[in-house]
Length: 249
Image 1 (cartoon, helix red, strand yellow):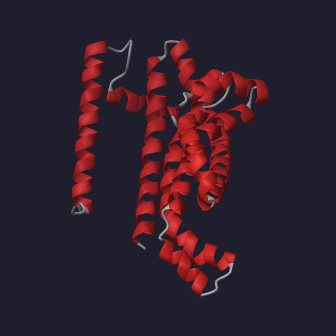
Image 2 (cartoon, helix red, strand yellow):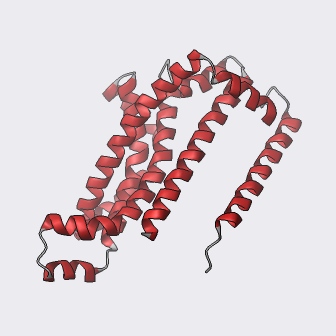
Image 3 (cartoon, one colour):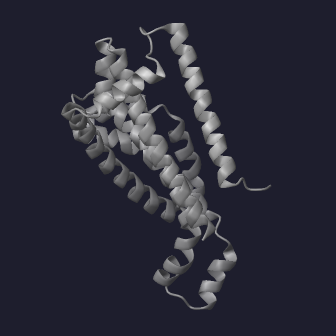
């Protein structure tokens, strides 16, 4: 299987972008402005929206919850993944349980989150964490389980300490997979925070989306969604490129 060149991938991205915009315009022509705004109209509204102080106040509220949730998800998921990966029996038992938990619609857990954490920032952070932590655990666990045993036997022959083994053998071997887990966890954590803001918050981009829907302000809702999706795509692309570079090295 041959790898596609950067120019070929760029062409694919352009083609996909054109198809998405064409489909968007088609839906707009069919449904009208009561359901969705046009691509150009949404871009104009989004451009005007990002110049307002009100938008950045909501964006800051979302960013605060998202950064906290992502940090907790990455640290917790990586540590648990490393521990479960090294302890084979515990990992074999935990993996199907985590996969089953991952398949549960997280919205069903929101009443419990509210009872435990109440309204506000803590609930949004908790909801983001439960979305993003499991993929990080699973990717890290799988990476540790799939390490070539020759590497570990070599480290023992060379009489490396536990810290030396972790730094020179485990970390380089599992880092690409951990970054892949972080990339998936990044998107899901952002989704969790936004959903949390939609349910019980008076601040944040998720609140703006729901507020636009309740006021029947279709341009506002569509433009905020466009901004969020654009941010997620750019961030995902950066993380994907970083993971590819680490994997090659």
